[in-house]
Amino acid sequence: MTAFVRTLNALLILVYSSIIAMAFFLQFFAGEVPCPLCYLQRVGMIGVSIGVFLNLVYGVRLYHYAFSLLSAVVGGTVSIRQILLHVCPDFPTFGVPFWGLSLYTWAFLTFVASVIYISLLLILYRPEQSAKPLQWNWFEKLSILLLLAITAGNVFSVLNQCGLGLCE
Amino acid sequence: MIAIIFSLLLLVIVLGFYQWHRTALVLFGISLIISLLTLFHLMTDKLQVTL
Image 1 (tube, rainbow over the protein chains, first blue to last red):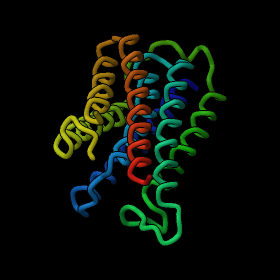
Image 2 (image 1 turned 120 degrees about the vertical axis):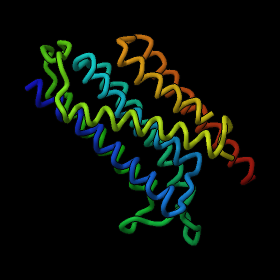
Image 3 (image 1 turned 180 degrees about the horizontal axis):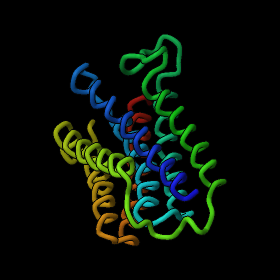
């Protein structure tokens, strides 16, 4: 059961890392320059991933899940803010829609999905899972490496685009 | 500001590897608070532009 829950944790990291990798693809190959709110949504996604990453390193703890949920709330708030900015009729949307929805709408849907997913993980929580893991399997290593690369990539991307400012 | 948030998150991951659990959690919390403050700053900024 513990191994199963750890795999589900690694899966969440992998999914969010893939989403941000896609955003990088759109940024560098389709010319979609991210806005400040887009970057804050990435912060929320990386935050959700870091909460479950800590589960992989230190064993499953309730407060790690709490940090993931808080990050999802922060990211969801940013997404809602951007949706509301563009919600009026005849007001242009930001960026190219993907399957009929803007990227910030998709981001909001992923945050809602992550809250549901983490709630299900909390149902599966058992105190014996909080034992410190001995070794990562290849799937966990892959997800952690991706998370590290994506976070470092974002640091360089933001520094390149906005420096230490607010990207205004 | 956003670069600082991402740097903090990167630091949280690195500290996680090196078993600095509490420091990582504190930095994680700080980065989330800065994110919210940045969002509120951007919101009020837009409000001024609208008004």
